[in-house]
Length: 367
Image 1 (cartoon, rainbow, N blue to C red):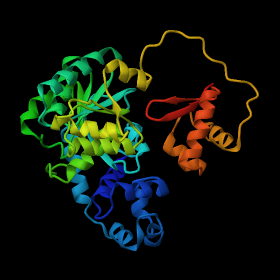
Image 2 (image 1 turned 90 degrees about the horizontal axis):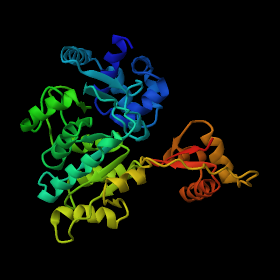
Image 3 (image 1 turned 135 degrees about the vertical axis):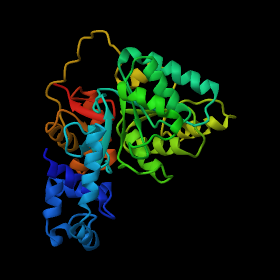
Image 4 (image 1 turned 60 degrees about the vertical axis):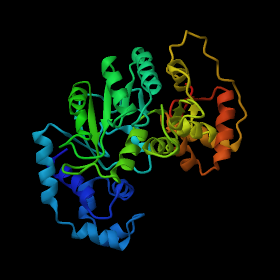
């Protein structure tokens, strides 16, 4: 990648009214950021979500100096600039409808680690919440899982510290630029995480931790993980937003039930009651649900020969031949079938050992 590419990639995030969804549509159409700026206004206006007003703003954009300053800052502080189409971009985020256009990353952890769990919860945790978080992460040590969270007070910080204590990589997702740390009390923790994980954000330098940035931060926490575990939370708050996002991204969500009389458990109970989260018991249950437990060698079931597939099942099989594995939302999109038809086809194909379900609501054909 050359400097011109990076310059235009950052510049794309600086254009007024061009958010993550619009930027994704532009890149999918034109292929790269420089091509977006070279495109004619009429061609830009025809892209979904752009129109004439946004097309005019793209063509009139001139603030490349700010993008140049951002590049210099990143070079000085050894910050990686990760664009949507880069190989090291968190691929789980690409399955979301609104992936960040650019991510700024400092650290040594793999953003595409094989197993990523986000652990979230209230800023005002109980002793029970702290104990449970520490126990959970200790039990995950042997499975080499990367722990993601938001570097906030409470459960977030406990999760990061527990990961470091147990030798697990951990990434903090920030709601501000990498020129500062919020809350400031976590500066020492953040420095340690840079050596055994990392810090990531979609916000450029000098961006403060304003209230409206946190939901954007939360979607990265939810989207970059295979599953989200909610330890303690009230019925409203950032953790509930993250859990809802994870659920809408077709990620697995787990919630600790707690006491029915405890306000800090009310959000977890609500998620379980609404069937948006599985009731969490322990790390063993988590590993089994995610398919990460160590299994004894078993004789593999043979695929049944001469299976009579109906038309819906044939469509699903043909689509899955395109990739090694595919998320269910992509199957919905490519098949043009109803969600119930896709679910029925998947169930029957699994029963006949034609395909298998994977963590994160992914599917693949059985060889």
